[in-house]
Length: 205
Image (cartoon, rainbow, N blue to C red):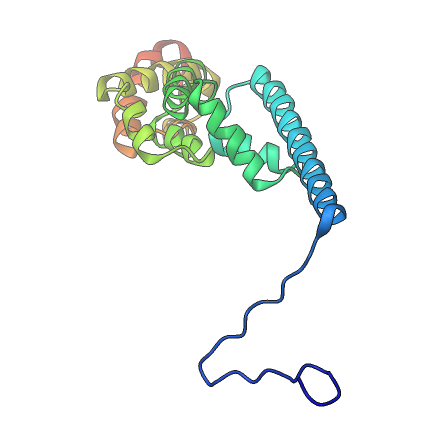
């Protein structure tokens, strides 16, 4: 303190960090902190409820992968941490299961739409399903299953090629099966067989 009664400015030695100033929040400051926390908790709760409602609506429409549901939730302007928490919750109770979804897609798309292996893999990757789950799901289909399904499709399609010359019929039928996701080897093995079986009724030129 100097002669005027004023505290002298404290000078700290090099390397010494001055103490942080003490801020007296007082009762008003504490009340504001509690109020801010209450607003934050309320907003988080509202986002969690919205995430739950959106998820339930999406899951009742069709099977979705974790990635697909995450995209739906993010499109509703929900916070990323809220979306991740909701996805973890749903995964924990088995409402989203990418491995089970992959199995279902492979089985139904092969049986109903006649998709071959490459088309099925492309569909699963489009839906961002893990490669391990894709590999496991694809074990459902044997080489014999693939050939049998391709042959059934080819025999069903062959009558529509009536009146075409043989080479054109082969080309059209091959293209059809390739678009379905069958390998060139499978296509070659079934196209001629299917056309040969249908030759008596199709009447190729």
